[in-house]
Image (cartoon, rainbow, N blue to C red; front, top):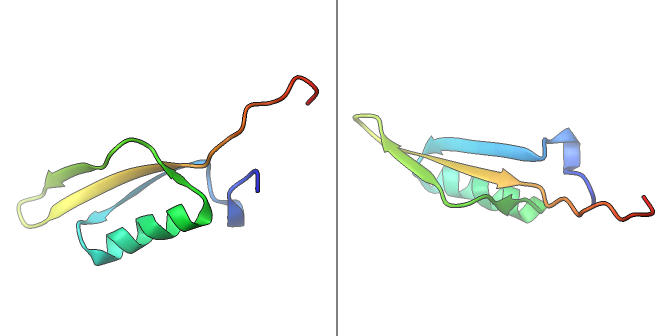
Length: 66
């Protein structure tokens, strides 16, 4: 597959509380074929740890004949 499914963008930033639901969302993106873009970012909002993880769709370089 050369493009993400369901019209999803090539680049996505997933955010949310650092919990099992967030980990499932990242895992689902990886299962679709996305790759992690560096490590996660974490912050504390006074009550919860909030995490952000960028994922990118692998894009193959264009060949000269394309």
